[in-house]
Length: 207
Length: 322
Image 1 (cartoon, rainbow over the protein chains, first blue to last red):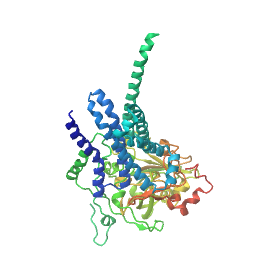
Image 2 (cartoon, rainbow over the protein chains, first blue to last red):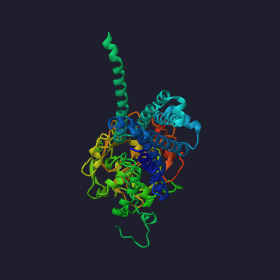
Image 3 (cartoon, one colour):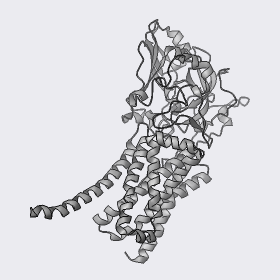
């Protein structure tokens, strides 16, 4: 992959990532958001936040397994779009569900795991979005930066669980997403365990 | 299509009936690229013609003083395209799509009414409709999910049917059952709930004048996605209590099982009265979004029908008996 190709591909990915928002804007403009427009906006932004989180977490396994190292250059973009959609999702809750009633929001978060998990998924992404710039990577140092950005694992798990808890009885759709998230997190555990045993085995051999 | 008298304008004429296109849930497609999605939107419009929401027959009815007044009616197109009717699928737009060919005839559809009654009977919907004059009842409908509508139902008091079969002294509850036919109802092919859908009321709740068996809305027979040909409406309770496409009504001594209570007993009680002070374990019930409005409004105790029904529950702990 040449730099020029990657630049072009980035434009394409950008447009794809903006697709769901453009779709909502189009539907809003044509008064076609359905019977419960706010619900449509809420579900769409929430779902795409989860999808982009999943996409960003797919980058690492995919570039290793498929041997496509250049894929890493799309990870930040995908992660930031996840943050973008989660912010939109939170705004619908803040403005239209709670009408800026912060006392009620606080009560809601404290009382309900469903809300708490969604809120957690959002809040944990804030430091990651802030420290996503090249400047911050340099300032923090690669290793520390990497450790901080492991928060995304907690965020995506919380988001998948939040989706699961939203559904009344038909868990097929959130179940599919939860399975994908479990596989992606499982891959990390597997890599971590493999590294650990690789480090330990020479020591074992000595004794 | 119905043939209209020029002097008599049915609701369906007043309400814009051009049924908005049921879009497949674009939320579903994780793999679908967003841009392709936006482009593909135009295709179904070319292929799929607009359909008319109601193909029902016009009903003769009288107005009722038990109707809710002073609230804007939810448009027919919203009532017929945003439904929870899991027998036809779990997405809100599934029932409108999947119930299109479900056209039960009032003369052929039989409701079996029995149990602790002196006169057990198998009644066609047509004959049930003759038990009492049909009335229009405008009721608020509050869904347990936190949204609400105002619906002009056409129906008759449930008490009229119960009186006709003469419950015995032992009868204390009324159990209801929905049709369980996977051939006609594709949603039944997946065990989302413990089919068939069942519901229940205490006998005194069932005898309350507000409880009706609805056979129509907006002046015409019930659209399939709203529970054709006959359904229960109890406006002071969450919407799911209003069991649809009823085939069986049984008078019993013990509190009967109810579908959502079987599914999640800690979340859905037998009574399921609308109560802003008793939250669903996962979300608040203090507010609701009226379809057509942007901001949420406060939910009323017993959905605003306390004057008629609060007496049914005097002395009961409604937090326990949710």
